[in-house]
Length: 259
Image 1 (cartoon, helix red, strand yellow):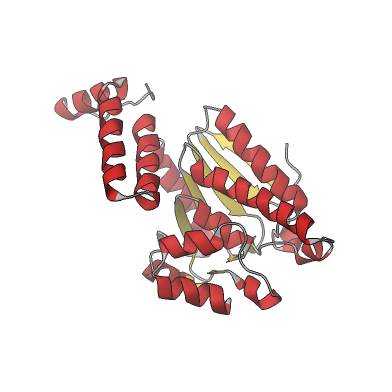
Image 2 (spheres, rainbow, N blue to C red):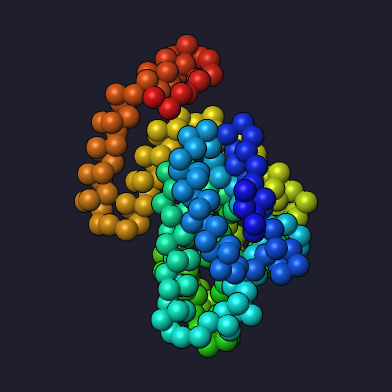
């Protein structure tokens, strides 16, 4: 199905394994194209409830394949490459279902940017995450300068971007960049546990929650609260709301259908 990924779907959980282990899962032009195809395919497949990214081998993703970048001949061609990966990662960020990055090893450059485009990050305790692009004369170009500055204290975002030095898993957890740090052997398993919990939640409410959090980040408080009120009105009219309240009152587990 894909040249640069392994893709599987089971019980509503799709797992994408970046699969260039001999290149530390670095991102080349084919992988960039396939990120876009992947999101389009997931959007079209309503059986996918949660999307999990991880890497084959010892890395999550080492970032852009520098040999591939060095072969680009002009600024215009380079900007087209950057635009394509920005669009792909923004599509992951905007996906109407939850996404989890199971960061099994180093996540540098585009690997970091892929992870922070996801809703949640589970990170191996010995892994590193960072954006070292400044060391080769460029900057994070797949949303890194912007998402990091939204997600981190400004001084820490600047430290990562200006110096190019990575954060340890423990520092990333301390600054709220990742949700949980676990032994390497447990990274994917923990991400799957999170995914298993998410698929039991009412799908429409989860989608609205994601939309509202994004609205809160990207708009003023008044606009966000108005969006919240509209979402609450919509959710009150759903079958899932009736099921959820009924299950609560009847002291049983709810079964949500996304209606």
